[in-house]
Image (cartoon, rainbow, N blue to C red; front, side, top):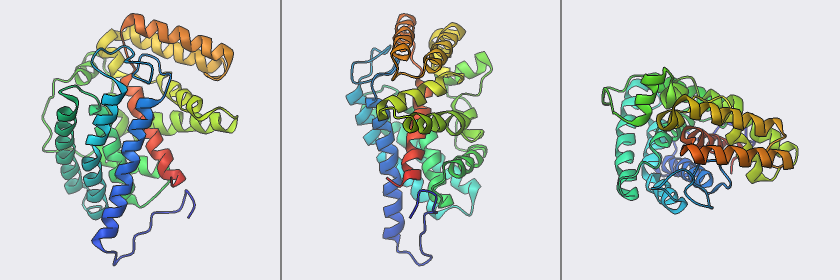
Length: 292
């Protein structure tokens, strides 16, 4: 089977086979979140060196949170596999699973928002991957976008979360806008940069940092907007573009530009959490495409 082959499940497949595929996708989602949490260095974000611009996060806590989400991701994938013929019902089902997953995340993290945005992004993607039976990232993202555009009758009219308030205040789409558009920053920025950096011989961790920077360079990140406004967003975007213009973090000039970016974000006490969620989404789709 190649990375582009569809995921084939026989029509008479036993329930255990469907559950096995759901478990595999859930494992991919958790691994992507853990890979993102442990990727080092990242500007302003939690990594193996410390908490970045945060006071209440750490990489072990992020890993604990990711593992707590495995049941929810598995349930979403199974729902996508078994309920692909009724998108409205499927959307309602995964919305309910996602809210249960958020409660499990909050319990595991002691009330800290570790992965709220990632539940939305990666949950849609594992659902779409299971339902479309495809390994192609673009196909999966497009299917996830169609699901995201369906209203969820069980969702609250307003959450009051910082990201939601930033969307309203600054007129940006946020995580929901990214999903409804089919994850353009993942498909058009993160994954191409990941492939480019690997092709030119960058170490894998450098390739992943460059993919994060490619997202940061143009994303209207609501985590940055919520904590630091337009000043923080522009600093992050300009700094990320500068690193990439220097050839990426693997080059001496790129590393110096990265250090300048990191210092700037630390002084502003801001973190590009939206870009981190989309990097995790890219790592998930990369795993699915490569059949890892």
